[in-house]
Length: 300
Image (spheres, rainbow, N blue to C red):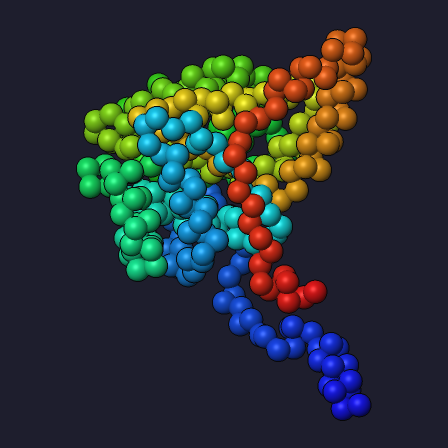
């Protein structure tokens, strides 16, 4: 009888009543604005999940690799943006918290730390130039333009980028996708040359749901094919790597919205030929899923 009572009591106890998480007061991460925020970067906790994700990304940084386009997906609060912020600090020695991030990785995983140092040639170069982009309700071109302009500004007042900056400032929602990919290639070539000598660039596109929402309601003027072109260029970037990572909370829902919207548009304008068009434009990204945070699990 007593055993039955004890089992009843135990089954009624919630995990949250036994385990308590002490919040560190950290707000949600905004990758563009928080890149230079040392206080936030220094509070990052290197977990097994983040090390596994880093290992997969590094695996494709050798010259012959083709997997440099990533989708980090997971629910709100699972750490996608914070990991991306940490990744940018690890990958670029010019970042103020780079050495701390590298020391943290060295302590937790010496082999992975050595691999990072070697693949990014951190002895002779600053590593990967971080280009954080935060999506908003506008075209992909406008979001990319905003992020790359801020990245150029962080490089200082160098006139080396004046011609590229002029072209970048002219981008609009109507800018041809081929022209954008060509510009990214020219930008990377300049960054990897003297006097900058970066290994390549690391583009983090956060809040991608916002431009996808915009694309779903403006299918006549937005072409998601741009995402595939950037992904394919990144996968071909050889010894001057372009790593392109997009963060997504609920990408499948927006993908369905886009399919419906594009289907209606193509059916009206292309007489039913849309299905082949859509399949050929499906973006080519490797997917890494972030699990629910412990705090979210304890609420269940």
